[in-house]
Length: 185
Image (cartoon, rainbow, N blue to C red; front, side, top):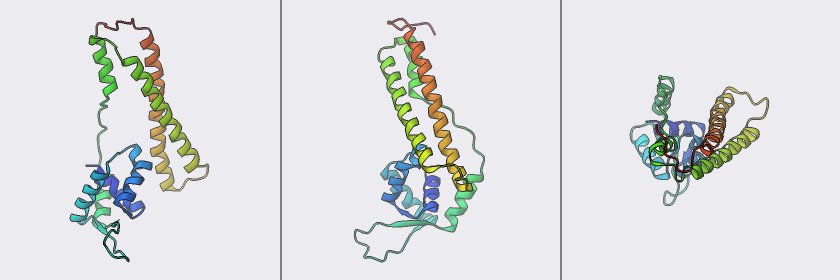
């Protein structure tokens, strides 16, 4: 149930239209909580119906005009309740890891190439996060909101650092496996 909370967070940061929210998700929240355009619009409708948000009055005719939304007190209270609630970590579910396990019994065809592809993707994501850090969090930018946002970015940097290190190790180990690749579990 976190998408409504992600939307409430984004709207509290800045009242926005559905299209603006989609773009903002692509540039920030979407790095750790993705949503499609359709999911965002569907959730905006639900949040509006339950009284958590409202569409701002437009100064132009409604036809073709984007609805901009803002959070109401009930939405802020729900977000505060959710933020304060304890939640357990989610178990890791990763298709690549499952495929490696399966390769132990059916062979490694295609796995090496995909490990290299994943390593490249994680290296690019790490570079992007590091660019964001350099651009958006210069030394001295330490207001409480900035520090919390930087913590989220640091989580992304640390995760990508882990994956690039693990994939580098996995590739080195993979190179030591005989070409037929079938091994006993």
